[in-house]
Image 1 (cartoon, rainbow, N blue to C red):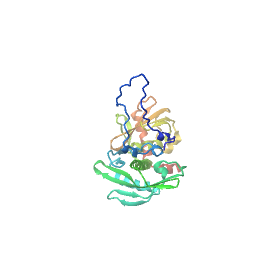
Image 2 (image 1 turned 90 degrees about the vertical axis):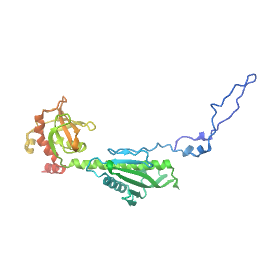
Image 3 (image 1 turned 120 degrees about the vertical axis):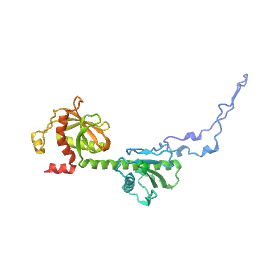
Image 4 (image 1 turned 30 degrees about the vertical axis):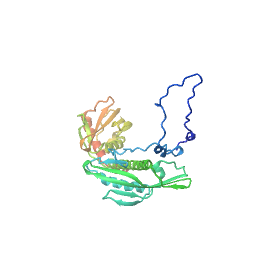
Length: 342
């Protein structure tokens, strides 16, 4: 509620007569600026302390490619498949089950064929509505219905949420009343919390993939420059490159993932290092370099190397470095850890 006084509720419109001093003529009047009477229908809204001053909740499209479904009767998001191999319907159901389990919420009704899941009680007020844990006077719990509809043509799943039951307790008094606006806000926040969980699971999956081995070949980037072409998404290759470079004499100085570059300083690790690797030393000057990543068709990612003057490094050096880097990319993190232990 608003945190100031509500004395304005006692204010009344005074209709004093216009006084004309003696000896003056009464001026002409018109009704253009008369304040109309308040219709009875407009008196039904909340007043004073009952006015909810919280900002309206807005659906968040934090999951890559997700979209708000406009004109839906309930808060609805569309989650799209991020690759041809992803079963977005299976993923969404699995993420929803685990999201509920994380909040210790039971599933009261599940009809996957109809696309309906009704939950038990959410008692985690902080997770769903943002109320402070220190507010012991206010408690809230709710049940929700999640509805999923598969859109095979667009490789997407639409998810909508609505409140089934609501209970709130304030100063020991419990109420189940819920306005349509409040129901919309709570459903929106529940869907937002699920979206954040969905995004977290996708990132964890990408992290796992980038920890496994991936193939690499020599080729040309989208600008026809000599490059290494890694068999993985931008996210996977980004993580893998950041893992691999420090092990080959590169000190990472700065990164900008949104622009796809990694700035490094190269320091030759020495003869013993290369002898242990069974590889030829990189023919690089000990100076600054930039690795530039670029998305390519077919789920591949290019890696182009530039010198301190932002000029592309010679193709011969790119080819020579390929052998060692491709072997490093092909090894999973577990393999690399075992090699270090030996």
